[in-house]
Amino acid sequence: MTRAAVFGAGSWGTAFAQVLADGGVSPVTLWARREEVASAVRDRHTNLDYLPGIALPPAVTATTEPSEAAQGVDVVVLAVPSQSLRENLTRWSGVIPADALVVSLMKGIERGTGLRMSEVIEASGVDRDRIVVVSGPNLSKEIAARQPAASVVAGTDLTAAERVAAMIAPPYFRPYTQTDVVGAEIGGAVKNVIALAVGMAEGLGYGDNTKSSLITRGLAEISRLGEALGGEPATLMGLAGVGDLIATCMSPLSRNHRVGVALGQGRSVEEMVAVPHQTAEGVRSCRSVVDLAAGHGVDMPICQGVTAVVEGHLSPEQLTGALMSRARKHERG
Image 1: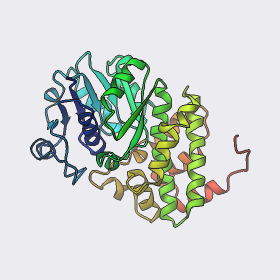
Image 2 (image 1 turned 45 degrees about the vertical axis):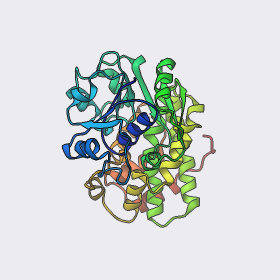
Image 3 (image 1 turned 90 degrees about the vertical axis):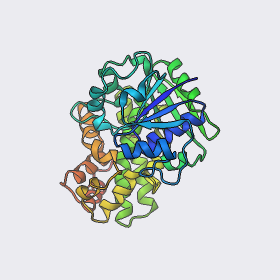
């Protein structure tokens, strides 16, 4: 029987643990930072902080001890906030089994280094061929409710990606495999920043024309950066690109969308960052996305504008004016 550990008991980590268990993996052990979360999962089969009302499968258990979670597992899933990944991997040095597959659920770019999450994992000593990325429209509450959804499972070693896909194929979750890790990760990271912009537009009272324009031009920015880094255009037109972008930009279940709406309504970044259990990766990764793009000569005006708002240099209203007053250009330029 396949055994798995999921490091990170937030909403997506918990929902993914359910997907694994429903796919036949047993046991699935969640590592939680707080004992109250671990004991609720272990004893009552629920995660009240992140997925209240969802009854987790009996195969899902939890612990606060990393070594206990990872003991004898075939796959380790990493579902922590992207900017804490390196610190956590240092803390877990020696815990991850040397032959286990390592799956990244994280969607961000590391500040200061510009590294994608799979690159951070590789830098910690995990062989690249053991690293697999899951990306796509991953609204955790809908997946935990077992609503039909699809995602991309990408790995430089297609066999590893196919092994993971076989573990996460219950009737309501359809995984597609591929080898374009770069495209999958760039799509997942940058869409969070675009979702902040779309949320701000909604918070300012703008309608669907505005939001559709931001999503479409945001996709152009994602595609430019992805291709500059070696990603494949088809990936960015698929689930890990367009699919994830639409879900994150438009759904009220999206944290990045909700934070953007609040910013458009006049709330501060500091207020939103202080909300418990509501990490918005776009806020934490927007600067690293912009710096990565600049290092490759890629123009990303929406991401640059969002970063200026997050860093206090522009208001959402000023961002609107800045984007609308840019010099006219060919659409595909």
